[in-house]
Length: 321
Ligand SMILES: [Zn+2]
Image (cartoon, rainbow, N blue to C red; front, side):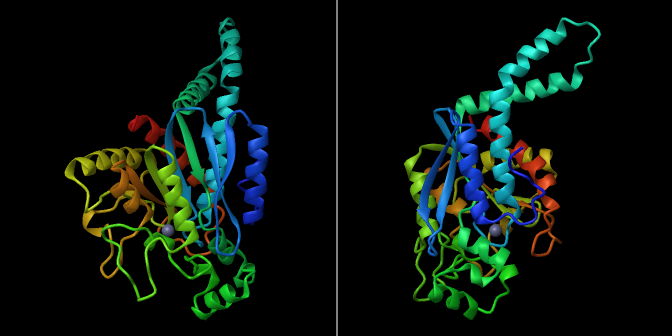
């Protein structure tokens, strides 16, 4: 595989290079699109995977320090693309082996079935992956504040006196997941207004450009699933719970209680708030990595997270069709 989950430091530049390589290798099924530019002038990359007429949106890296999910989504893109391309060949090989009564085909058959499912998924959907919405924050958390090239922005970040390892924000010190216009959004000071940030606008434009069927936003930590939306209808929340329960079965993640949707004294304005209120379609926040993990997140979490999320995205597609 091209995306190496054991690579010690997965930089933003590396992610961009890999995204271009994947597009080249799987050019009939992956498209590379830039959906916006961060405040420190980094392109925000989207990879469109699939040939379907319906759309799913998956994002990660909204918070800088949550460094596991971006590479995991990249790996899933490659893994799905590979299964899609090889599915037909696998089927032919398996059929020929079936002629041999002595062959043991259990594992191969299972793999072919899985490949067939992914093939169907990508015939039905085009999945819009934004693996790293906040490239500046991500680079701060990996490399420190010197990663910010614009001196004014760098000084602003440093003045907040937060360790770069704990950095959640973008290069203007804004938490993007409190920046989306929604009913529970609250201004935190006189200069604070919703959708003020380039990264927020990029995702909002994406939401509006495609008529999508659902949205997943991957965060860390907690191995938990936020599904309940206080401002949405009962029927909306029943569907959300049904999806969340299925995700719980396949990942062993916990469901977050409805009353804990937003912490006391915290504000709404999450990606999923905007999406659900605007489009009335399923939108879940999934927190990968155990709650006790410390920052920087151990790269060891990548493998298990990959195994969990590859099933979640697939299952989401089949549940909301
Ligand atoms: Zn987060």
